[in-house]
Amino acid sequence: MKNNDWTRNEFLAYVLLYAAHCDYFEDSKELQFIFSKVDDQTFNRIHNEVVVDSEDQKLNKIQQYISDNNLTQIEKEVILRDIKQVFFADGTVDVFEKNLFAVLKKIIE
Image (cartoon, rainbow, N blue to C red; front, side, top):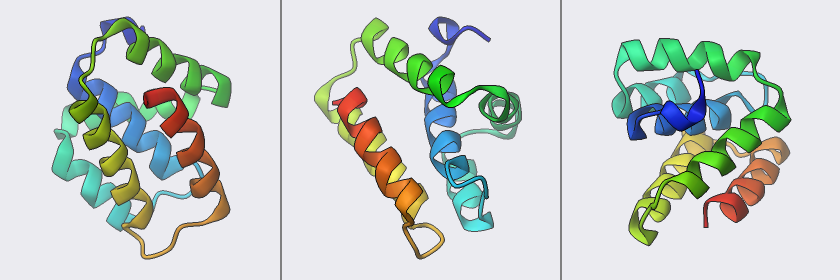
């Protein structure tokens, strides 16, 4: 799927799944939080994309979506808050998650 065709919900699923997958292990609590934000069909379709994409592709897709869509500051803050919630869902934040959050924050803000 080309990211410029993503709905807002698909974009959210992609970003949150990327956050959950950044340490190559998706905790059940992280997935539970993501399922609270997106439907099963979107989750499954986007999950495959996240797993297949390289790190550069993931970051480029996110950056492209942000630049192509006029997100308000509030929308950006909500996305960043949701990313934090994915990271904290399992009770710990590791170095991979900290580093990814710093990168995503720069891209999204």
